[in-house]
Image (cartoon, rainbow, N blue to C red; front, side):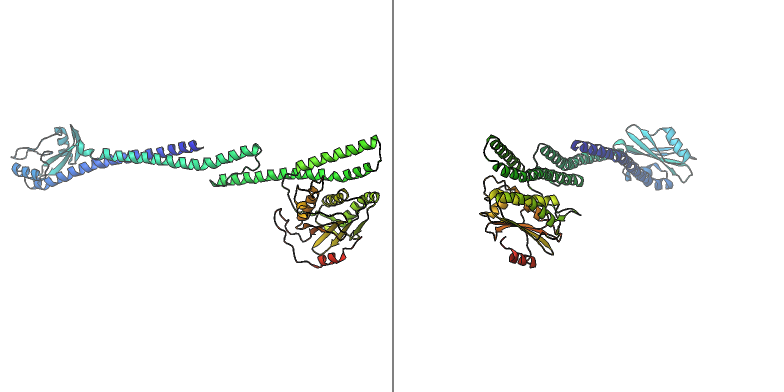
Length: 465
């Protein structure tokens, strides 16, 4: 592109210089010739008044000498009545040319060796026509033409060189962003997802860089979404795995029971490996789309019906509150079910058999709060538990379950808090916003409102199951 632009500018500038320099050079040459013959006409005109008065040879010689052109001027007076022809100075023009000017009465020029001659007719008092011949050397006709042509050539060369230099700089300015765009595309194609292109240069290339960066961001986001999906789906497998593990534990002794327990343990380890492998991507939080949502009370009742069977097998007391009437939230049904399964699965995995738990659903004007609490040992470091990929400190935890819950809440503008339960163990509070505010971005502090009637009523209504 750079050399193509240079070649185009070189060709265009050369054509412009040639188109203007050649006619201008010819005009300069013609102007020099006109200047030389104009001077000759003035010299001839200086002698004309004297010829109209007298034809005396001595007087005419003095007039010619006073004109300062006696070496290049000649006067030709024809013979008249009783007078002889007079020829002053050196004659260079041919007799035929002089006779033609005398007959026609018009000035003319003729070529002679070493230059040209101007033949100017002058009427005498006797009625005859005298001819004044002025010699114009070739040096006067071409005086200054060579210098002018040299200046024109120098200006033309300077214009061509300048245009090439400017075209080269413009080409560099265009090629550099394009080259960076190519390098960025190669880096992205090689798997360097952090490759970006500076958004500078001409408008078109700047827009291309913006589009490339946007595409790269979208690719990174799509890859992150795929990894999130793999991690979330893998984590959802832990719910049936928990059931299998509990059922396998109740099979008693024997080779078949032992093989079943080993198979469940192996499957659980493989699922944990998938989760740890896929969870390195940055998560994406997005609000539910138009028309998305579910009945939180119905989902809570459904999931508690599933987990209650396991709770009875392990002798756990459980309680559900606030799920007796519909509670609409802007969250997909599958996402809320996955979040509840993640929290309840943690209760069964990380607390001893017989530990009580409860799920409370509180509906307010601008938010819905879901509380999952247990009577276990609690979480010693809630902040570490909320950090993606760090787990709660319990052996075998991937830390992805709480992250699923957090992304669910933040997609609506809410948040997740971990604290102490009135049951004596852990309480996970899921705040689901209903007023359609923008989703909370990861890494930003969630601004909470002043506690309203819902929070105050929540703190008064939490009781032991």
